[in-house]
Image 1 (cartoon, rainbow, N blue to C red):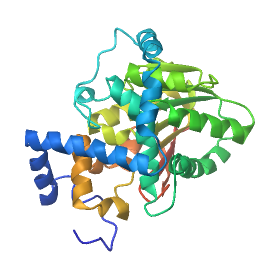
Image 2: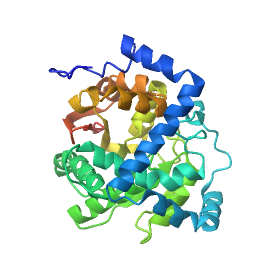
Image 3: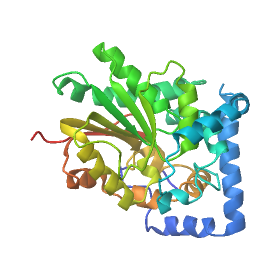
Image 4: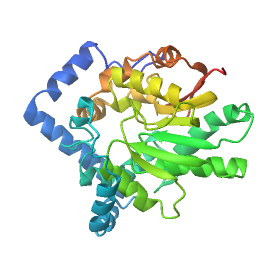
Amino acid sequence: MAPSTTSAPKPAWAGDDWLSRLVNGLINIRPLYGLMKWQARRVMIRTAERNGIPWRANVQTLQGTIADLERSRDRLTDPKLIYPDYYLKPFHAYEAGNLCWLAALEAASATQVVGLRAWKGEPLQGTEGEEKLRRGFHEALAPHLEAHGGPIARVLDVGCSVGLSTRSLHGYLTDRQGTAPTTFGLDLSPHMLAVAEALDRDRAIARWIHSTAEAMPFSTGHFDLVALQFIVHELPQRATRAILAEAFRVLRPGGILAITDNNPKSPVIQNLPPALFVLMKSTEPWSDEFYTLDMEGAIAEAGFELRSVVPSDPRHRALVAVKPAA
């Protein structure tokens, strides 16, 4: 595929384009799909360990505390929660999706690999890419914090996974304003939440919550800031719209919605080599819905005033919106 010279609204390998249909057809061949998933995970591990991320050692360290993690999972689990159908599909190369220990034990290392890939060709090692990725999001958010008119007191990180995004945002806000917000991390996977709690060694986060994002256990107007960091690409459009509506509800008037995720207009993403975008789509079942979603329109439909959409690094963008004052 020849590199694009203009910024198309989405990659040609997503949506209803002929290339996308061809890739989807390959993925639907079950033996080939299994090989793709295996290869996608293998590439991630190889990339990690070539660049100073001890993937297998990290897993072994957490595996050594599995009894404690299982107790945490059981304590954090909401037994009444009904998982949405979209969450029960295989993704990220795991047959059980995020509802298994292997996904949770590997999540931090996988996140760090995503950071390294954001700046292809730069000599980044270990957690440097992830730290740079987080800074890009925080810098995009900063002007809107200035306009907020006071400290951010209550923060919700939706789809927090193992809490790297939650603790990074919490630390940034604490350093910036000199006071620590009360920060919550919410996720559908109790396995992820158990690891998040274990990694939160200084107990900076107020609470890790097992819940759907479409119906959050918070009162209306409870938060000053709601963040969705790298989760929308894992959702069908109906779920994204429902979560945006719920984020609107739990934010106070004047509160901030901050989203970061893959940038459909990124030349890096649009020009991925075929082998890479085939592997990526094989582990991301909702890619077509994500890349064809009018995210700006969905944010406006939920009632928000969209304030900015900016690239936060070569592969990702940040969208910041505000709930109108009453």
